[in-house]
Image (cartoon, rainbow, N blue to C red; front, top):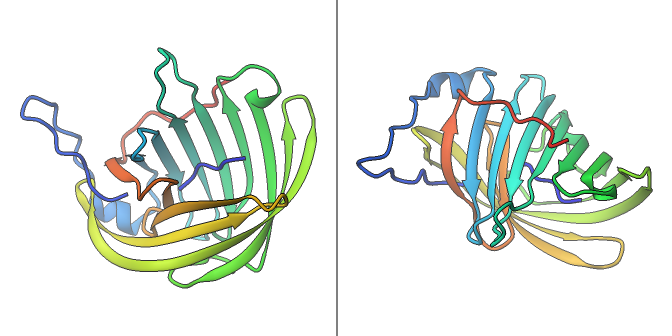
Length: 216
């Protein structure tokens, strides 16, 4: 199951485009106000992430992803992920696909991942996932995940200047299949932006938005 979660330049608007709403950057950085980050990958996949934060490290992240497609109605994937102590604990996925894959739930158990991991160091850990598909098929898998910290900076994210942590992830599943992901984390937002081809690019940051809802 691909989690969608969790980036650096706001796209410049043309002179005729409507100006984006102003963002209270102090509230974004120093309170638990809900925030929305929209970004895209080099292949055209677009993702919108909304995080509902809690100072305790427990929070909920909604994401909506639309892959590039030549079809008039490309599929939509919506994920609700629950984090405990900064670590994903469960998720629920809904899509516009019909059949058993239109809905999926998952529970996650990490082994070796520190609570509230700040992404500023390297770590290798195992993640056990128990998923249930729409037809009640249950599947359990364990992946080995290696996170590599690359750099940290402050950068313009939308209209705000925020902390940005760059990293990369290599994951190996039970079948020895590997994947590589570019990972950009915004600690003040508690949001990760990821892509498989190159670092994703931020489109907007907002505290005024319509809540993401399940597809079905």
